[in-house]
Image 1: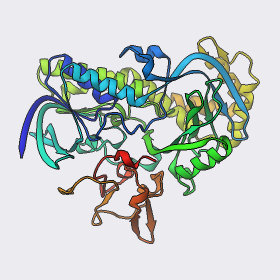
Image 2 (image 1 turned 30 degrees about the vertical axis):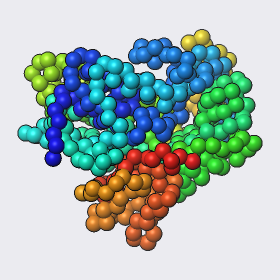
Image 3 (image 1 turned 90 degrees about the vertical axis):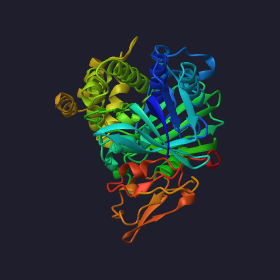
Image 4 (image 1 turned 180 degrees about the vertical axis):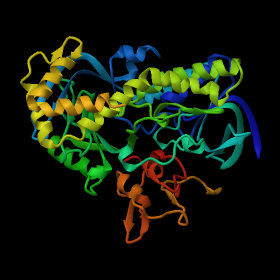
Length: 399
Length: 75
């Protein structure tokens, strides 16, 4: 089998992989970026909402062509249809994920990385108990070849075979994934440019449904469900039901199905010669499912650790474990809290959720200038049901 | 499992020797492309857009997406 040699091979040209490749290439490491799809960023499998522009601008200039729509606030819709709305201009925006992913991959190429689309990693190479590269299939010619590399980066997203191949993670339990479906709906009124979250066991059991403005009269409308609470009904069926009720007049376009990992987080993100980044490393937020900014943060830590390891004693398990430590000290720590909050929040029954949202509607000053006032939110929770505060506190303080 | 040298295509490959018909894949599939019928796993490839969730939760590694989601399958 043909063999090639790089310093770094990155599996997957999503945000995590492209950003990592851009940074390792910029540091002078020969970098190969593999993408199994024909086109980077396509098809989009994402609800596309992100936070304030500055969150992204830490990583790349945010040109207008990457922004599908600004977000001027959010609304929570209770199981019975009660609406808690907060106008917050600048709270975030809906990104054009295809253009965004292509921009990031372009930056990697500009930095000197070699990008190959339609090339799929089909396994990892191991030497002396360490990951030593990847076996790759060129999907166009069906040729298989080997890429040896000092460091292999698993940025293979929700499909994440590579952490399993590297021995970092076995299979996921069904409760650790959200099963999702989404359509682009056209011909709806998104005049206020709010993002909406719809809650309740009949809408999206164990998760939520969303409507995110995509254009002047279009939106990404989708939902994620906990498969164990769905009573055997599939995400696509919940979606069609939601759309019939929520936007009956809209035309239902492009369907995407898939899911997201909402696990507690991998105990280790790296082993000798290998590290995982982005959703493959469970770096997305387990409460919201969102993961774009987290992936970029993870990529910066991963690339920094790789460059350091290759300049020093080599990419040993020990050297790369500093990446896990760095992640766990930063966004990884926040993600653990989000995971506990998710266990609490999505475990609430419809009645409790109804009371909480009802109370939020009646709590003045809940939304301050910098967003939701956590103290007032806690107060609203306590007034709706004091036991909830104890459950929340117990869940968050639990190690 | 040998993924073979055939051209990539949509759908999902089941290693029948490894599948224990536990139903985890069927539970997470957003599109009802995998269904447990009796004691065996039935695959409906025409419903599958290889999103990878089924393989992610397969406890025995019996499932594998043979290729990426082809662009023409987007509805």
